[in-house]
Image (cartoon, rainbow, N blue to C red; front, side):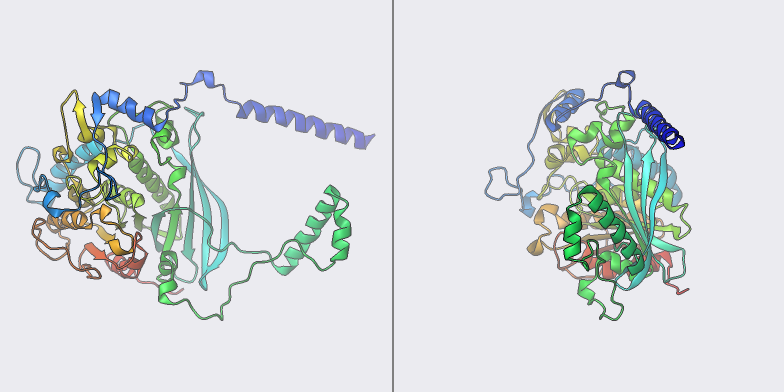
Length: 517
């Protein structure tokens, strides 16, 4: 009788809790603005309508055989060769002191980049609550590490129809005296080498697993009896501490960081904001807009990813294993664009590695070489503020505009990072870092940004700031004596070959020296 009562109480408990869970989890969508579902084309058309744009110029093709192929002729690359002067105020007056930069010119540039290029972050972005899901002691290339899988839940109580959970993994070396510097990297976060059960624990797991399988299917018992030594779950090979170390060429960027006493944090951009125009009513942008289309001056995807990286830094400021004053940001290609945006707007980041970022990153917007402004107002429009579409407009209520009409350019984004340390990285076209990225346009921007670094007491590339006449150096030339650095490696569309140069350079400017416990 008591057993029956206990069983009945259990059933009542399960049913009650199931009802309670259902009540909590079911959302009455009628209480909230209806979630907008747009295709990419519909979202772009909506923004064009808001701006009064009737027709956009098509972006250039990367196929040389197409009629609308990209330009690679330097004679045609500079329709407006003079750049906006980073040290001239909008009223025409020259900035000659650091105080003038911080109080007058920098705020002007921030305003223009937010309004016209990358978009503004709304004031109502909700709070992120971080939870350490897993803490694991692992071994990476014979280096003992502490690895943490971390989830950042964005408060969506104001609009529960959209959920945003930021995913990231932090890995720090356990064989050095901390706290340590950390490089935040955009990418896919995974635990590098999850710890495995001991042989004794694995034996218990297999015993329980076999019993569960037999209960589910009694015929399985006969199979296990025929193979009594078989274990369904086996261990992966344990780290071999006696194996020869990896060659220098085999080391990953993460392994180089750990060997140098750095930590690394990989953050998933897709968990912050989808990388497409249809997703602009989702992710953190959609959440703050309650599922509605964005306005012309609101943030694009690059700014949203940068916001996510800044929230990761918020977490690192609470992490005792990390020196939050020595946190850097890294990315390649579109993530290189995001890394530049992150560092320019958030002055807490101490160092940046901007890899092969192209247009929308370090490459000059007004250059017409490879990728163009029209490519960003076309297929890449979601990365930018809605207002950026104006600069690809062929027909509109305000006339025709091009990249030459932009009030700012990428050298001024680099200047917003000054005097902090920024390393600009590219590869070579022969290995896959295509001419499309316009390495020369990035070098010109880096040269032009140097005036601000020097005004603020930092070192630039060590050459003149004559961006029109300075020649880009041959690949493998180290220009890393200052806080502003440039290096073109002999690899492809990656910054991995430059990590062996970046890490000691960054450690120098952070005044960091690896210390054993």
